[in-house]
Image 1 (tube, rainbow, N blue to C red):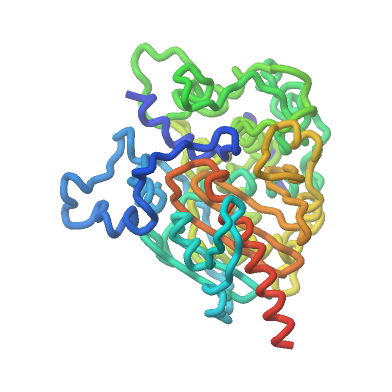
Image 2 (image 1 turned 30 degrees about the vertical axis):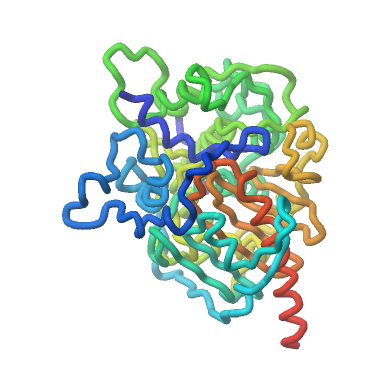
Length: 448
């Protein structure tokens, strides 16, 4: 099936911020003066409106602040205008419309935020969490759909680190189809990484981010490794005196090992890009071709997706995908239905079942994610181990594909929260998801 395949800059490095999902310990501290969800709406502010836009309403590249708040509320919908991208092609002949069965009662569903003693309604939570768009599927039908600000049904929105979950799903598919051995050492698959921290890590340890890396993603430290990664990956021409690595792949070869692999979960974006390299090496296909072949063309997407690329055209497997709300919902529904759509097994059920089982809870507990008690991380998906067995793809600024098998529900939220860390919106969003799940279960019972 596959042929083997051989294998100022810092200011613009902000695009790597998409990949970071912060913990409670490193959640952003927001000023009390930050605009609320309504006042910061991109259309209310008027970013990039007019022909031409007014000078004080322009967001351009290579400006260093296009992803600062509140500009990010426009930028998340316009990545292809700010950075080089590759296309994730759909199959127009395989398009599958999503049926509707809208429930107006969802707006009034009430829940108690984890950090409050005052209840909130679902509708109120949308603005509180700076929601650009939200869609709920129940029993295969769209029961709720909401758009705001820069987002429309046909707009591609940055998925941020939900890209990682797509990368992890692709790996699980290739494992199920025997193209990839999760117990192989990385250097056996990608010999170029033999001198790096990843050399003696297994593919599985990379997938579950239990590699031990001497690597810092502390954005407050100008000497942190994430900035060196940014220099390497930046698609713009390098300064004449630049001596560092060029592109994702060259940088990955420089990462050094810290301790023994397999002991502690450590959220490091470089794992995702290593996994992207592994996937391309074993298949001979680019990352965007793999996403297209296994997902976009099979689930009947409505629009092409896109993924940002480095200066060599290598896709950002850790956070570069942009897609429409409905197409991301189709991915969630594929997961919910164990890889089957319209009675056809599109991807191996084994791939999804592996993710649902979750990862090493003890390794996860050692990492200090106090806002996600009893959770784990498996194949770049966050598994909550709650009473509904829910799991999710998550990205900075509030991106979520939340899958609740028990309630037969998929929630997709696209957002542009001023705080990158999900700890800023989890207290409001996680109980809201659970409340809606229970509401839909009750509603389904009444309908019967």
